Image 1 (tube, rainbow, N blue to C red):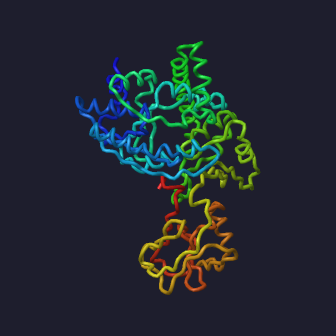
Image 2: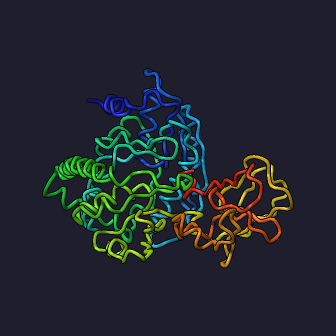
Image 3: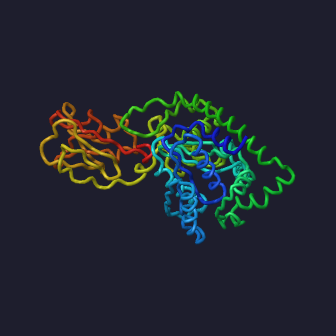
Length: 437
């Protein structure tokens, strides 16, 4: 089957997408993908085609690549968008560049649109070998997925079944030219060492190494699918709604997980946490054991790469984004008939006729007292205990004052003072991050 036919078959699930965007680096692989798609566009009805070039600014040689990409796209009649990104240095420059790149792609993709990248079978084999040497589990060894969600759309890799040799032959046959990234030959990068030193020796002894590794990855993807199904079953009883519907936070009931073996606990949590954060390897799950086994009165926290897992009131709560930042002083509520934006802490509004008098919003400092009709003056801390409000919420709960009189606590109509009852204080709590908003 020709490359054109295989590419068309691989893209069948996205033929009705609003648009296709090609991640165009200017290298061999993405150049061939662009040329293949532009050629297919003459004979097939395809979604509108666009190219995106990400300029990282990490090396002088890359400064000329946008012009190369522009010339290529102009010749094929494909519009090009060049985006400059700032790479924040970290432990891994490769990872930082990738994160900056995909953040830019995420911002470009519209609803239902598809980003096409040009990874091929040799990339898949190198990735599997690289991850194997790093001690990856089943999910990691399943390799590069054919597709996955990205922002409002999808990233798809239609050349994963094609070899680099095939792409190179196509490029020569059609007289294509491309840029060579000098960093791809730098042996300081572990992946380059695998590509140029280790993998050729593999291929010399096992000519079908790339194919067999890709086949193993397919088996492992199937195994991971079964593990995901098991995780869904194990999480079913734990995913009951929390008693605080106004908390837009991922949470689980802990008790159903405690009846599982440690291995199934980890499998279920990996499945639940994977969309939320990078996870530690299997040797660094002691934080989960500590959180799980802490005493009933404890409020343990497991800190992970992109957030924290809290145990409160028999539930596991995932916190990230604004929830991990200190709250700023609420602004003056000059117009209570309008919603009040709370810096880093969501939004507050009064439903109904606002109480009379100048109103002020505050956060807890300790020692607050509320005069409740029929109950008299009650300590706010005790009232929050009665409502079983999680500790991580209490410092963020907006309190409505008139002068020094505490009138109400947001979202808790049972906790309000003797003021008129023709209104309700509602707090739209912050979500963990923009993806969940």
